[in-house]
Amino acid sequence: MAPQLTSDAPKNARGIYGLIDHFGALRYIGSTSSTKQSLYTRIHQRHRTGSEDSSHYFSRMYNTGRMWRLRNDPDTKADGDIAKHVRNEFIHEYCRAVWVPLPDTCAITDLEATVLKIAPKHAIVWNERGMDIYEEPKNLVDALIAKLGLDPAKCAALERQRDRYLIDKSGPKARTNTAESKVSLSIEPAQFPTGPMRLIALDVETANNDRSSICQIGVACVMPDNSIKTWSRYVNPQTSDWFCTSIHGINANSVSKAPTFPQIFSILARALAGTTVFQHSKFDSNAIAAACAKYDLEVPSWDWRDSIDVAKNAWPELKNNGGYGLASLKRHLGLTFEHHDAEEDARASAEIVLRAESRSNYTLVMAPVIEEGFEVIEPMTPQTAPQKEISKLPTEVPQTSAPMADAVVVPRASDASVFHPDLARKGNYTIGPKGGEHQVDGYEEALWQLLKMNEPRWRRPNSAGNWGIVKGTELIRVERADLMAGKLSF
Image 1: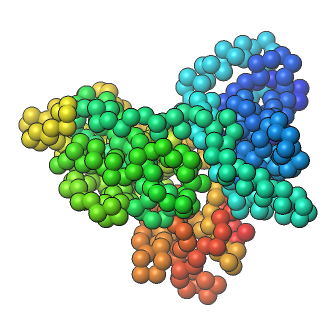
Image 2: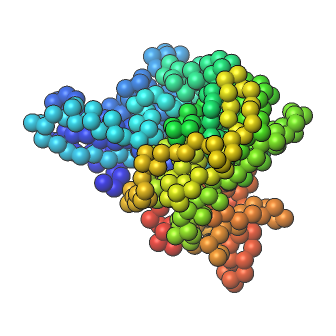
Image 3: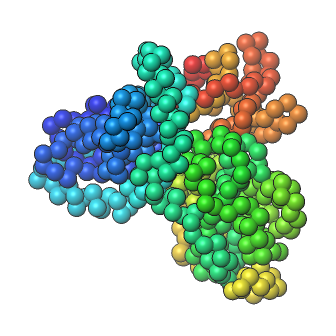
């Protein structure tokens, strides 16, 4: 079903539904459990306009910045009511929902339970309280305030609410969730997966365009039987610049109790010493090197390999047809993971290597075995390396026709042109500042990297057809259909 406005939900029908965030991603699946509730009542009234507790998911996830309200606080009620009004309008303007009407005779709650069991993790992350609330999407809120025509007094009230939100470190009670409790876990080395292992994949997320600003590290360890054990930790990058929060959802509050990079690195340096480490693009190895330089640490001598290169050899048909970014491979291979979570992306990189091995019936170079206690022994030789069980993986690559999100956040230049899919030359997109440009295979991967830049820059032709670099001045949300149809400016 195409995503719809929450106000379009049926008023005389019950059923199963999904909530979609302002990035166009499905995040919650629920149902109308009561016979007295319609889809409209549940979605538009309860989730959108309800209070900020855990059962009113839109209201909880967007209780942030200028849209923040402390419920039942008499001292800030006037300002809080204005903030809640803006939040309600924001959800109506930028968020969406999907639904399946069902007859009252249907066992709706049982069907919902079945759906939840097979749903990918990212589609029910709100159900599991596995995400922190969003940082304020500043540009979108600015545009909404202008559209609503709020007077200076109401705008000042919103600014006060943002200040209160920033001062109150704990925020609403709903902020205490799985994502935050994750950082309080011990970082003792024993919690890192123990060997033997034959493949290792690593992914990082950064707070901003500075690659040393690592705020999350995820590792996926492939065991001899091809099972995957993962390990992930938030990292405090000791920065006030959180430009990339809109991409991965991690913010200063998420890492307030997290260890610094040197503390985490002491674990990784011992655990991965002398191993082959897969990454998906060279961003991760560059980030590790940059963080080491920042803290005056010795850059590890890991044997880095790129799962993009593995994918190019295994699936040449994707060249100029979606590319080899994680989003493209996710669709093509039918992978299930939540993009821009370091643990999930590391697992995806490992699974790509396993799928490639399965397709080629060839075992890639083995990583050293890591025994318990992180004592590294001699690498396995090809003759003694444990052979994976091919039967556990599909021999044919599954195809998927899953629809992409209906909207996307893109950078826009001062001339109103945006970064769009038609800017590929010979199958690649050129991004980065003059003298520091690099080519990226795949629109979504290029867009992801642009969104992580403080000043996104990309190469595109001007009105005379001459190619040059343009700088993005703001981020906007546009309909994906418009981009794919060739609309170049907004």
